[in-house]
Length: 331
Image (tube, rainbow, N blue to C red; front, side, top):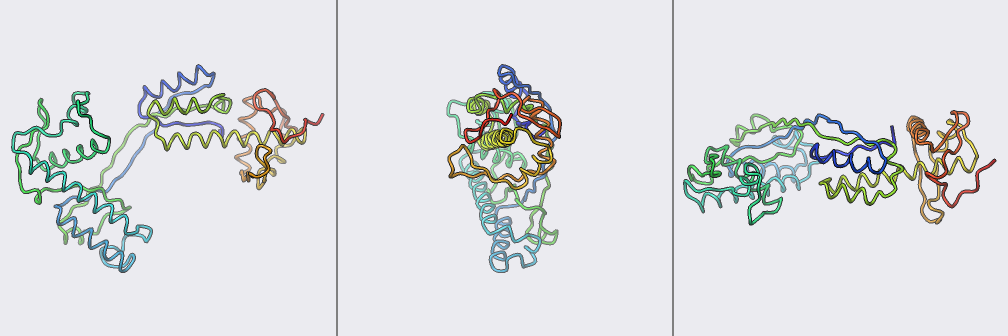
């Protein structure tokens, strides 16, 4: 149904809070889970080896586009900024590892923010930013993977302090396929494919979301419950778009008094309509026949329209009224 809304959330508890909020507003919603699989490429190697590989790819990309034996697998869309970002990630990781190994000795406890948050479920007095937390987590993982650190009841304990340049680093490789085997062998690097599967919690909201009186309050509630800003923008845009489309259909029915499903399909193929009666903003509609069919079905369910497909008429005028630019309905 085209008027339905789906909101992915981080946990079942958050999903239950959203359903509870909507229930108080008279909006039906339910929770479901959806599988999510991601695949990430990771380059592993010493700092100098990874730097040599990335620098060579960057230089050949700049000189020949996608030409060159090391870069011919990478599409032109991947500009030099991608190589720059990967090199920057590499240098940041090397600096973080070097800092720990230079400033600590075997037996020292490191990664206090990570240990307290992940294992003790508490926060330290000197809480760090999300970016600092992510960087510290990546560095601790690197040290554990190199068997330079172990987990104890007291925290992450440093086992040995080798030359930082000998440590194997792990850098995300933002490309659709790995380097050729010959290239990996030449630069003494390894490519790891990381498969990750999770079950996402999703709140499914019925077409009644269209009738929610205060969308802004709902969006604010979602924000307070951890829904990302990007998702909030998308949710708001979808809600406003649905409201505008249903308003246009109701306006069309009030103009004509009644309309057939076929006429509504034709109306939304490539229609330009003035919004809000202001005259300077125009909306262009390009809805497929299948989309219009589903829209009509949802609006019937809500009581916004009534009648058979041959004679569709306005329904309850108190739910969504025609816009101010419209005339009175034809008798």
